[in-house]
Length: 199
Length: 266
Image (tube, rainbow over all chains, first blue to last red; front, side, top):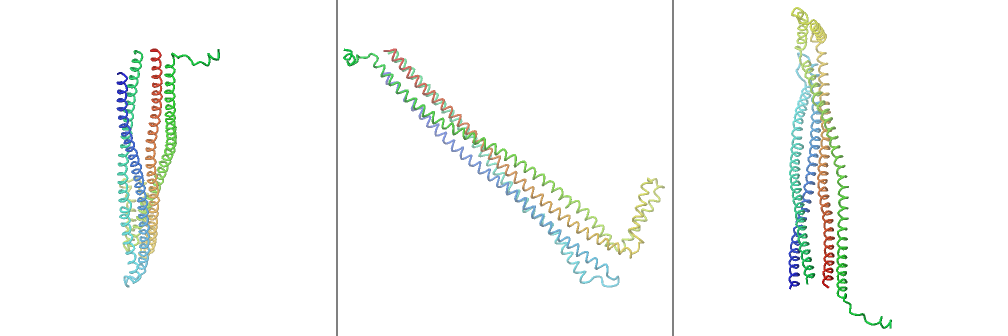
């Protein structure tokens, strides 16, 4: 009678433990998958963040290049304007007081001086606008992208941490199950031995 | 006789059942030991793998920390260079260009002043001379009066005789000065633009190094998490090995207890 009862109890405990262990294994696998997915997301978002920051740096470089190009072009026009203005002034200085007030050459020099001067000012203003458009705006956009990816990476990091915590919890539960099963077996064995000794 | 005695079947052994129980127990023990050995071997392999992972992650973290420090240092150097060239660019494109532009503007005033130019200079010289004379009577410091006198002489020299003929040469010179100032201003502005480009280049490099540092930091974080996972796995393997050993010890102990109980009963 006792021989019949004991294996049944052990079988029940074993089946329960097996079921719990299977549940624990499933939870552990799920947490592992979640952690791996979160790790992959974190790496991808971090890489996107780095790429965005590199793009922002490239935009700063492009802006500096465009700004310098416009500054040099503006300066060249400014010097050209000064040279033409000098020629015009020089020509005006040698005119007779009672003669014509200008000549074709002086008018041409003055015209080109004005053209170069206006071009210089235009290029100067355009350089500032292009720097804003090419560098500042694009760089700000890329920095915003980098911030977004940083946030996503941080979120993935939190998820990975949560998955790790879940894994720890599952492992602790598994330990408790195994401890309980071991205790049940020990008690059962002790009871069996006691019965054998009494009989 | 002896041989007959020895060849006769052995008498019924009262310990036979106990011997068979011992054999079964030893078989159980052997099976348990074999299972234990297999499990311990598996756990040892897992432990070795985890230890290797820990070592590799540790080495990777060290390398990443070095790369991170290098990237930060390079970013700092690039930022320093950017600041230096930006400062030079501000000087050339700002201060120097403004000063030379002011010189050009003054030269332009002198060059385009026409007949009013010498009159203005004469008036300025006369004013300074009068101030130098009246200064002591008004209680102004004699040193200041002397400076005003010297200034009036200097302006007088610049005006020459004050004639328009003489001012024509001055105007020519002023035009040359204006042109030179404009050219220098343009060159200075261009130099400032070029220096700002160099500054921007270093700023971009600094940002690039900062981006690299961000990437190294992310890789470091990932490796740190991997290291934690490997340590967890190692700890779990050790715990499992300990548990398996304890379980097999309990089985062995239980077998021994059963044998003892059976022996006592018999």
